[in-house]
Amino acid sequence: MRVHINPHRFSGAVSVPASKSHTIRRLLMAALTEGVSEIERPLDSLDASSCVRVCRALGAEIAEYRAVCPHCANPPDERGEKLVRWVVRGRRRRKNTGRPVLDVGNSGTTLFLALAAAALDEEETIFTGDEQTRRRDATPLLSALEGLGVSVTSTGGCAPISVRGPWKGGKISLPCPTSQYLSALLIAAPLAPPGTVTEIDVPLLNEKPYIDLTLAYLREQGIPWESRDDYSWFRIPGGAAYTPVNGPVPGDFSSAAFPACAAAVSGGTVTLRGLQAEDPQGDKALFGFLNTMGCTTLWTDGDLTISRQRPLIGGEFDLNATPDMLPVMAVLGAYAQGETRLVNATHARIKETDRIAVMALELAKFGAHITERPDGLIIQGGRIPSPGMAPEKTLRVVQGHGDHRVVMALASAALASAGITEIDDAECAAVTYPGFLELLQAEIRNVRRTPLQ
Image (cartoon, rainbow, N blue to C red; front, top):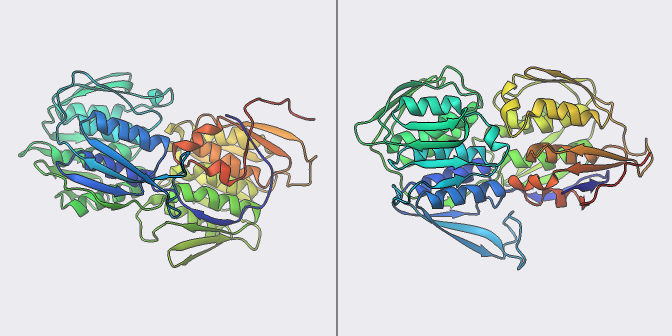
């Protein structure tokens, strides 16, 4: 799908979609209980649907309930109803159904977390996914699982991947260029057989806040574990069981970054609803970055308002804990005065695409001056022509590279640039934020037009 976006000021109130990270963790943990969970207002997106499909294949029964709900951020169906609840009847072990092939689509989070959960079973489970997912190397996680007694086969560390328990425990080393490897073991290890102990050395850990998020769930469940303060070592005994996971899913700070960016670059004011100021999501740091760059952020009765009364200012930002914010920070840096340096984010290259290379390539089409570094980007701001500096119907064509965060970042950039922006692969925004392009008044154009001179 291709869309056209015209420059305009973005303002208003936005209900933020539910957190993907929370949604997938809650759903997997609910699927691994023996009880019934009620998950309120989960994320309704392509990634969430992939996780539902996988959990059903692992033995859980999941009923979806829809209703007309003005306060829910999920997209409405043809009847105007939205997904408002999952009722999950979990099964600790799945029935013997042969060699199921589980398709995680584009959801890397589902792949890594469900791999470890499936490794608890003594029946073989095979995981696959879309083209991007089949390029994501899981070698460190697979090696760790093998060290714990799990039988693993893969295609060079990528999907298709087969796992078969039992999980015997032991001591392993797990470097984590993505935190999802460690979260996967932390969620599965407590459910290993009684007497089993999983000991994990972690010589490298990126995205530490996501481990805080996972541990918050273990703490809520009363699951015992030991760790060093810096998370370089964990010891998790087996024999535990999860209880039902109930309640509403918090809003997603990762998704909220995109309407915030759209307002910041276009000079608008946006109020974001559904976020929780105390939530441990790492991408909450984006709003501190906005403050540093000259925006005002204000919490009022659970709503977060972002506005800008002066030009954005560049700076240096360490994105090790928040690599998913590199696309949106690249856009902010391109519209800021002075130089912006995005550093310590090498792992942004191993997401759905190489986001460092892709953002340098695509923002250059807007006129941005960007130098690509191994671990990030150096951006000379203020080079993108503003509306009125080029013919109104000038058309630039940029590629989304099948990456939802790249598409949404480029769509935000289009609001403050001269001319019309056409974005290819735009449909992938629905991986985590269905309705975002409509929010920006994007016009669907499925037939490419010749760029105007």
